[in-house]
Length: 317
Image 1 (cartoon, rainbow, N blue to C red):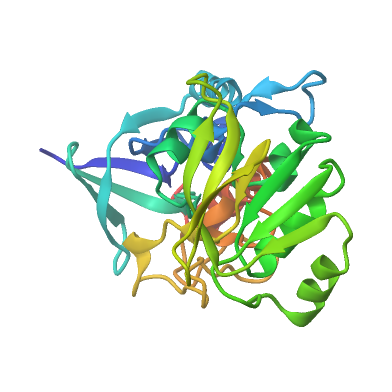
Image 2: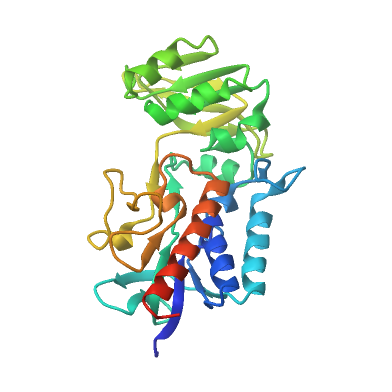
């Protein structure tokens, strides 16, 4: 299969990827977006999005991504469902190999492959989460849906403490479940959580099952197992927040682009430039701090503008 060429090739189809495509397409750069099975990124796992500007009454996550894609396509973006398996960034044009559609070459590459929340990998957790039944990995995104409910947060690091503290704005009570007998979080974050009167702790325990209300896919409780005694107990709750970290989708770029200690792509200063000229990164793949749709979209805009200016400077466009 002959290779296909693009001035701007975008890997990823979340808010960052589609926004980069919209800006690149409007600049007449004829971008191509490659997306794998997870079309639309993490917002495809979100039910209602209430904090994206412009939608007074909220919008469903998949619908928001549908609108992003339609706008990108309207301006001339080519969309290909293909799983990228390998990249060659050692020479120009860059090459991206795919599992089903052969090779793609490009003058500039925008990496918007995102990050994935680490889940507990329990069958019922997945089923209830996918049904929008009260399992989440983002307190900032979903906390307002849990007013006056008792919630469970799983984790013992800074992220878990941040999530727990944030959720006390809405919840009647937050219980942190941690598999050790002390927190891994920094002292200041641990002290803040432990001083919060609405936060309780269950130590030496893990969530081993998630229970719904008679099959209607709405969480009613979690099952806790004590590491030391192996005793199991049912713990009633109105929501479960999994805060055991995120995993950036950077496997393709190990040894080819600079990564930080957490595996996120490193960008230069206040730009989206990576350490390889002509390769740009945007969205959650390079953001371990904010991880919001609106910030991802903002960096997608930046990446497209950076790519456009780079092409102009190197006489490709």
